[in-house]
Amino acid sequence: MKTLIRGFAEFISKVQFEDLTSEAVTQAKNSILDLIGVAVGGLSMEFPQMVVSYLASLGGKQEAMLIGSGTQVKVPAVNAALGNGVCAHALEMDDGYRFGGVHTGATVIPAVVAGGEVMDVDGKTLILGTVLGFEIQNRLSRAMNPSHLGRGFHTTGTLGTFGAAAGVGKVYGLDEKRLTSALGLAGLQGAGLLEILNNGAMVKPIHPGKAAMAGLFSVELAKRGAQGPATVLEGEKGLFKAMADEVKTGDLLKDLGEHYLILDQYTKLHAACRHTHPAIDAALQLEREHAIEFKDISEVHISTYPVAVSFCGAHRNPNTPEGAKFSLPFSVSLAIYYGDAGMNRYCVENVEHREIQNLASNITVNSGERWANLYPDKRGASVEIKTKDGNNYSTDIELAKGEPENPASIEDLVNKFRNNTLRMPEDTSERLMGTIMELEKWKASDLSKYFYF
Image 1 (cartoon, one colour):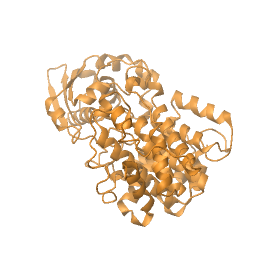
Image 2 (cartoon, rainbow, N blue to C red; image 1 turned 180 degrees about the vertical axis):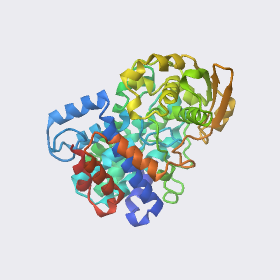
Image 3 (tube, rainbow, N blue to C red; image 1 turned 120 degrees about the vertical axis):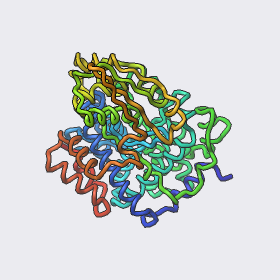
Image 4 (cartoon, rainbow, N blue to C red; image 1 turned 90 degrees about the horizontal axis):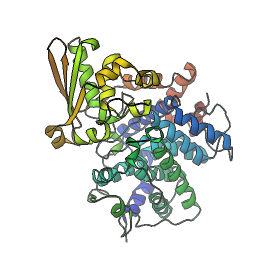
C-alpha cells in the first residue's frame, strides 16, 4: 500500500538539484540568509543563551557548529540542530507559510545545515534539502490547518519534524525505503502546545528546536535500519486523527514538483508574531501619511481576523519582551512610538515604558467579519487612529509586507540580515552573506564556519 509518507519519500528520492527552478533556488538561498541572520539575532534573547550555553557545555562528538557558542569546537549534530533551531525562533522574525500557520525555516534549515556538516555536502545539496523540507512541511500544515491550530497545537513543533526529516534525509542520500522510515519516525516525535501564548512565551522556541533535532535524529536512526510506521499520518491511531478534527488530504501528493511551496513563504520585517504585522503596517502607514505625533493620539481601534485576535489580542500590557511580541495593542503602540518594531525594540525597558503602556491601554482589538471571511487568503487588518484634536484616520492592509504577493525586496532582506547580525564582526557578517548568496559554489562547512564569533 502506498501510504502518504511513502508517496512523499518516492518524490524526495527522485528530485535532483537540476530539477529545481531558478526561482526555487534563489528563494532557498534567501530563506537561508534570512533564517541564519534571525538566529544570530536570537542570541540577544535570554532563553537561547541558556540553551546554547548548556549544549556547548555538554561537549560530545564534534559534528556541527552551534551558533554563537563562543568556541570553534563542534557539537553533536542533533544538539546543533536543537540549539540553532531555538535561536532561529526567539526573535519571532523567522519566515512562515500563511496557508499552513507554520514557521518552516526554523525547523528545516538548522537540521539541514547540521546534517550537511555531518555528510560534508556541497551547497547545491543544502539548497535541495531545504526546498524539499519546506515542501513536505508546508503541504502537511496546509492540510491540517486551521483545525490543528484550533485544537491548541503549535504546528511548527508538531509538523516541523517532517520537514526536518525530509530535508536531512535528502542531504544524507537516503533511498525511498529509508526516507519512509525517517518520516515515520519523525511523526512520532512532533510536539508543541499553544498554551505558551497564555503563559511561557519565553520558551516557545523550544518547539522548532526540538523539531529540527527530531528530524535529524529520525534520519540517523533510519540510516541504521530503524523502521518508523508508514501509516503514521492516516492510520487509525495516526497523527491526523490524534491532532485534528478535519484534514484536507486531497492535495497532499498532488502536483509534487510543479510549484515548490518555498516560493509561498513570507518574510517578517517586524520582530513580533506575524498576526500583528498587518496592523503594525497599517498604523505606520497612517503615521507617515498624516504626520501623526505619538503624543497626539487618544485611541486606536483594530479590526482583524479571528486567529490574530486569539493569538495576540488579549494582552494590552505584557510584562516580558517575549510576551510583548504576542500583544497586538502593545506592538502597535511600540511601532507608532519608534516608527518601527525591530529586534531591538522588544526589551525590558520598552515593556516598562509608561507612554507605550498608556497608549496600548487605549487600543482595542476586535474580529471583523470581512477579515474572517478572507482568511487565510488574506491576513489583513483595519486600523483607525483617533487624535486628541478630534481627527480620525483609517486604512486597511490586506497582506503585511513580506508576503509573496507583497514581497520584501532584496534590499529589505540585506538590511534585515545586517541589523540582525550586529553582534558579529562586520567582516564576518558580510562574508557569511556572500557565501549564502553564492551557496552553489561552497560546501556546508564553508557556511557553518561563520557561526563562530
